[in-house]
Length: 496
Image 1 (tube, rainbow, N blue to C red):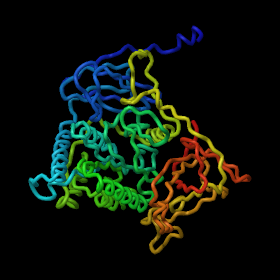
Image 2: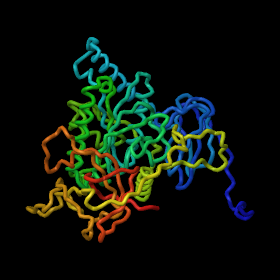
Image 3: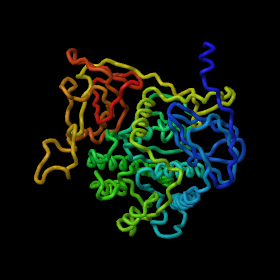
Image 4: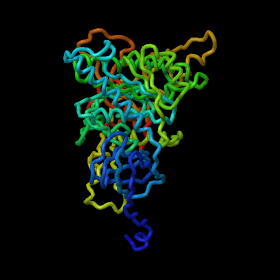
């Protein structure tokens, strides 16, 4: 490097310490292309309910927005200065802890009932917690869900609650456009919005130090619930059937309960665009997951509505919204979707901030920062190898927007076969959900079977050769796609 280039390089910031008083939290926001290292020097602290180990350095990047909270007080050391950082003594953590204590009591009563202990109340008192978390946009619903899941894992009872994400705009453990569920047996880490719910073994084998999560995944294909609410309703109910079937053969897992993270559209007012089906989707969640607790985050009107609709049979509890929740604009959400798609194929390693000593043993949310580079496979396949469907029409307005008396030529739930060779097919650059093969023991085939099949993985179409009827697909690993079926939605992938 020339002397001029060396002079142009920014000097690394010296480590900076913050001493946090009890019941306060250090909040930070990162700009694109920057990373932050935090080390707990002394005391006790946590990030979204996941405990930090003293002396260990944790990395955060990719526009991460998070907070380090302490009940007893602590000292933390930062390498690099975030774009926004401050300490607040107004946090919702005690109300969240109180909710956890109530849920923990339900878990213990459910387990005792399974082992034959005399009931301490009605049959409903021995039901495990099945929690639905709803609230408006930028309310911190995922923060609540992660915190409650992490507190359950840390309770010392070997709980493995099921975390269910029905927000297709978030991505969860796979890519945006999907809904998913998995059991949580170790704390969910926070390091990057590319992995909002921690790392999962969903794209390629990786060496993980905590969760090797294998979620159940269904592909909705869009970020907005209003695009095809009937499809989302069906997939939520499919997800519920899978979770309930697992709990029928796993009493300990059933006692741990489940937590459902939802999209902000569930809280949209009746006059908002796309809000016509929100009550239908809330009802789908309540029925599919047998919900017995609804947590409403920071929304009085929604709380009253849920009390009126479900209060006679479900515990509806309003909890405060954190003052640290950041309003996320559409450009930010678009960048996060790109992070998640890139991370699925290539991983998303976090580079330590400049000047961080190599001896710091820094980790990305508890996982090794050096084990997240993946090597996807690019394959040329025939158009005839892969059967591609789109669910409904390419551009489909809600049924309520149709003229009175008008009907569709293609229903919202109808699988439409897509020919990559046809003009305007939209296959080029499309994200495809590769479906799991049908159950060989199920002899009955039906027209809409593809709507009920789980996702085995995702592909991206990077080029199309119409004359030769071939296309190039990017996949996490090599394999044959002959005879397989895939679904396309509205998400696209382009190399950047």
